[in-house]
Length: 400
Image (cartoon, rainbow, N blue to C red; front, side, top):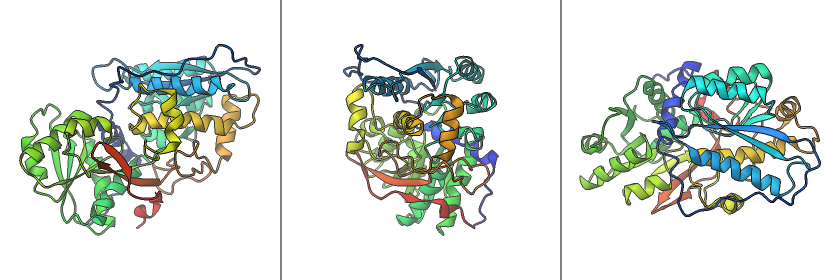
């Protein structure tokens, strides 16, 4: 198999592929609570302003849980005395799922003199990164969807981004899938995601996957499930409800297909919606599973949030990295934080991920800011998501 070249253009596919699993994200629990600020805490240092950007109340992608996660993270830090005695002041910005509004968020970050943009979710990184870069503001834990996020010297993503597509493709071969299908929305950039999946399959000496292109208006997944069922395994990159509908349709037709999903598309909502049809589905992720004790503080901070969503996890983790990177610095500004991040070589986000080295760029053009090529595979077991491997550096999948 001829292996497709990885270019900056290829990375643009992430805004389609990884966003698939987040489109339906944001259905907060109705019976939960989020930690309240302790008014008795006194702060001794200069406040540290930060911003988290996410789309809320739009006609398409909505991730209000990400803002809730940011609020829970900052309140938890502040209730413990802040960072070195300085209160963390959160500015949340709704990008409206629109590049112009996203650019406005970035410009607000500059005018408010934030020390960093932290976590968040947006498919409009192209409008955000250049503004932050010009102002010298770091972005810790961006979603890694835009090419600029994976190339800018001010970007410090915690997720592997495109590497996850390659990894999940290789995994199907390791699991003895003699034939594999890719179920992706029929949009122009989805072909780039398909190329990355096939890069992983080809590197593992497997046969190219069949690309099943799903119209974005599809509501009946019987025909899609039948087509996917012609392969041993199927890699899916669709919104939560559509993944559940696909799996349910396959089960109704007695299809015996094993499902794999891109990062973000295997979570509690998918498992519950599929009513058992996604059992044993596999995905590749950068964070320890939500059942790990490392997430206990996050769960204590907010029971409103479904902590199985990787990009909700990413935002909480980004705030832990903020604290790690500031260290003992008493005057945390964008400049001092950027300098600290550039020297950080053993970031762990409080044990939520394998160690991340921000001093070592990824050796693939267009993916050079992928600092965390360490992924583990997880599997659905009933309504639980369990780890089935140790973290492993997948850089070698890009060799040759």
